[in-house]
Length: 145
Ligand SMILES: [Zn+2]
Image (cartoon, rainbow, N blue to C red; front, side, top):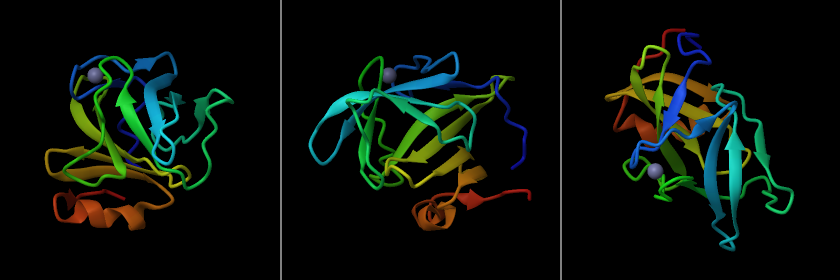
């Protein structure tokens, strides 16, 4: 991990540019693919922290696919150019530099990629190798480890 992107980050919807982070939560509207059940999901803004808050009535099981939508404009946040199982939002660091942030829709598959133009500049999670294949033909990998 480069450590260059710290907690003063902001997150935006790529469609309406609304800020999705309030306090220490990135707020999404979500829908389970198997049954269409909808609810809110709060994700932690620290990259690599996969704690997730949701109402007990919107219980998500390991391995379930959950589609993510902007909590403001309700656009589908699927990363169409990468894979149907991946979400894309915009991340702004404390110097207001802009990155694309990708994470998986499959509960329990903790994986995050940060890209700038066509370069993967950071990646987090246990299942990076499973997901790299979706990125490898569109992005170069440039991780300084
Ligand atoms: Zn939006």
